[in-house]
Image (cartoon, rainbow over all chains, first blue to last red; front, side, top):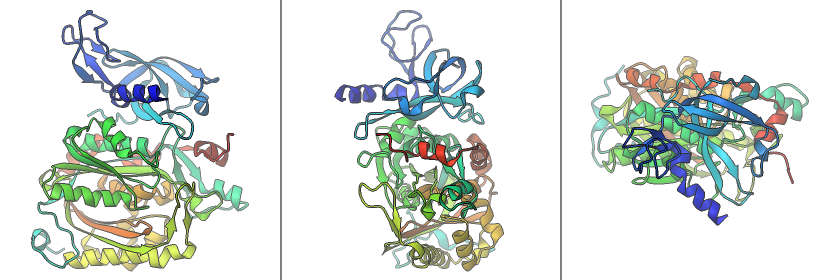
Length: 138
Length: 365
């Protein structure tokens, strides 16, 4: 559990607010943040928070959930193509599986991801839902 | 209407209970979040009373992955969008709630981190039953009004739980609203004056480690809700030299529909003055979020120059009363986030069985 706590803490910027990077050499938008730009292979250091808007690239509904996620099953996991370019895997929320379509515009929300028992930490992070009135569009 | 510009901002030591900051303050941004699930009161009545309906039409219910923190985060993001400030300009974030996800560990640091407001800020949780959010609002006005910071955020949010079968189960709901307090010159609504009123009145409580609250039944009425709201509202209006007719809107804490309607009448307000801010019939009682969300709904429609009386109530017991005046800056900012009515319209009905699953009322082991 100690390791998990440290992992959650270390990743809080990307998990809570989609903090990625913008490569200062080639302009590539990067998520999650990493040491080397996947496009130009040069070191990256510039933090850039992504808008959280994108569309469903593909998706799959999970009926048999892995440990820690059973309470949410059935739920849908999607690959989201963010408007800045990066692809991101995340759960969809506030939407029934039958209503999901490839290309559907979605936006990031911060939700509970999992809990470790009744006395462990609660992990929060990004999920995506169908765009609701263009929230955050301004 | 009277000209209120004269008396309201004079600063002098006095025994008046009206709270006046050193510099004028107001609301620069506001935002609400209401979960999409709705439990009709007919469902609760079906299970526990053999049919009929409860005191409201339906209540908002948080989904499986929602809690007070996630509700607070979305409301707060909406408030930041409207305020047009950077989250790192906030010198305080206070979350008022009676249902924080952790017994020990602040909700406010999570909200601050999600907004990108860390690390130079005050962050704490406030507990005062249903008035924890307005208590946070008074405190935020203190920070800005004293000049300790230019912006401070106050949130009232809850995922309230009523004991299955108890009368409170009909209304205990989920939702929340966030306000960013800032200097009056940037405000969409300036504060004309505020006042707080607290006594030790044990009308409702939840002991440590208890899942559901207990209450004093009829005792929650006259000595608690009515006494505190009437006393604080009357003292504020008298102190400001105002009457009910000076306000276009009144927003009162709303544990149901009947109480706010009755106290409004006693204070001299008409049904048309309270309608816009009375949401409990459609979303239930969002506890620390209730009065604040009613205020948010009024900000969604109010015109420059309109005056609003806001009075919260928290069991235990106390009320915070505020008088606001809408400024010309409202029109440029209100459309920058979803409105309360948008969240009310985003609605998926659930039955009592799904409700018990979503709200963790089933023993799984």
